[in-house]
Length: 175
Image 1 (tube, rainbow, N blue to C red):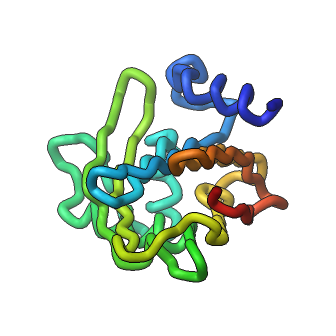
Image 2: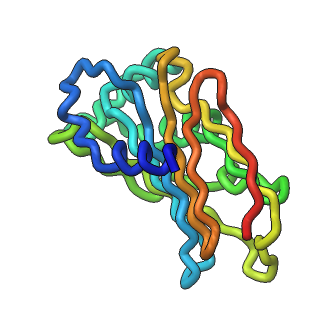
């Protein structure tokens, strides 16, 4: 219950409260099953300035997220980073491997960037009773105190977890 309370607090937190240089290093990842489309909707919220900093550090490239001069290869660099730092497996099938960024929203009022993906799972295969494995090391390569909050919703299964430098993976069964 403590983790759910913490997650709910940070979902509603206004990143702007922490200003451009913030003492809290956090990301929020939500995965919700969309039964109509038979996909998992994945959304990731990060501090925009931190995300740009890590992309620059890893690739020596400036993204200029949400600016008129945004890098033309921006989405490619975002995908590359996400796929190397976030893994979602259901029954050993990596759902993030072949996807591309569907949409990104840069919100200047709270210094955030939202990244959206749709993760497909074969319609014929039921995932109930299957093992879910999550590895989340988003931004750990930039900050030692990085926290990555995770919420997974599939019908009757609701799981939350707080990832950190020493807690990078989480496993559970879908009910």
